[in-house]
Amino acid sequence: MEAVDGVKMLDGVSRAGMGTAPNLKFYAANVDTIVGIDFNAAMQPFALESAAQAGVEASKLQLVVGKAEALPLPDACVDAVVATHVSSTVVYGVGTCAANVRGRGL
Image (cartoon, rainbow, N blue to C red; front, side, top):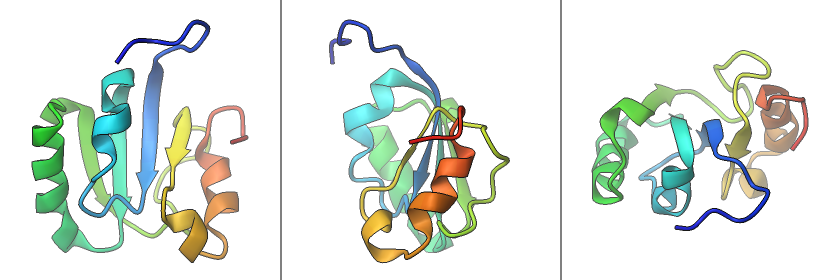
């Protein structure tokens, strides 16, 4: 993937509702650290498999059990939150995710 002019690499991304990580291949190359969060720990082996298939180094990925409505991360710890399906299924998901983004906005 080529960088777009004016767009910088991201230091860290939180992926709320990581699940099996089907979309990881679309953004992993432009991110230094990915924190994958899902309430179901049974999804972690599948997420790791997707990461390997996408060529994501294991050291880039940290998998955490947690819920989108209460992300287990400190405020302003990542550059972006990816919530592909969570934002449509979790009532308070988007507002909660915003607190974790550096600069406090989406």
